[in-house]
Length: 327
Ligand code: NDP
Image (tube, rainbow, N blue to C red; front, side):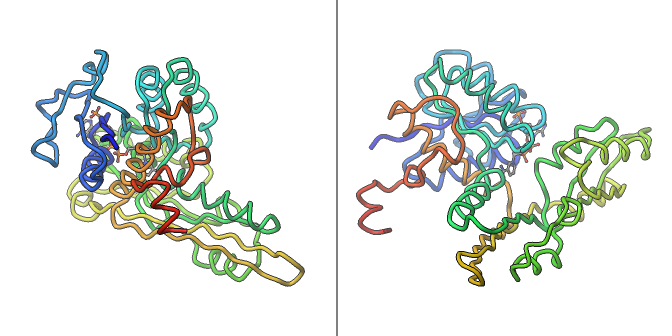
């Protein structure tokens, strides 16, 4: 078996996590980090990691099997994923659920004629949670599925928050409703509105001279991200942000309960409890990068989602080993 050679595009929290995760995968190697910033200004976790300007990807490169895109979903990935899928196999973690069909179409239109393989919207949600929703619904057709997140810091929502004019810094926490989760586990199948399942809490540092009320109104009315929830915005100092909000925990639950015959209750529950959301998401991206490289070699091209990737392709083990030791 040959090594799978990976390039990281964008070096923030997720980019750092991918660098670390590749170090834990002996069948994969890191070609380098590609950034829009001055490469000399980017300090990597690994001292041997090479950092290149993103323009370096315009050259014909034969030292990359797959690029892992680590930019933000709001502004980076809608541009970078289609542009890069026209020349490389890619994996991204595009997490704006409402716009995944458009993102898929744009990436597919670039990847298919180029003969590249592009796995979009992987991670844990979308990603592992999406898989669990589909598994449990396919298995228990009569029932109801519920996804609860948190309490945790949401990367996608914090990213969106920080791009609001007047915001100097900030974080967003998602909180699940315990009462709602207990009703679901008990098989009640409650009709929960988006607002009843979770709330969102933002901690924001204002730019000098920015008006708090204008910024608050802009945040709580942001479509898809904040508008469908009860969102609270707290204004704090840069010092408080630094002192109280540096961890990046997250996680959540996918629960389906239903019946297979009258009165026979079946419950499937999947839980993630993550101390570092970016390190975990990065680990998922690396496993899907392995699958993308293998699918490309096998001639499976175009945009793909987690639903299109066979689980065995994620494992470094061979199909023979998996059959012998894991079935
Ligand atoms: P960051 O804000 O840390 O990084 C995003 C981009 O910003 C980087 O790729 C980098 O690009 C640029 N950047 C990073 N640091 C700096 C800096 N100091 N100065 C200037 N630019 C910088 O975002 P995260 O890595 O935390 O998250 C990225 C995305 O991951 C989220 O938007 C979300 O879409 C996704 N995600 C998905 C999950 C899922 O389950 N599907 C879960 C968690 C996250 P460059 O190097 O080119 O400048």
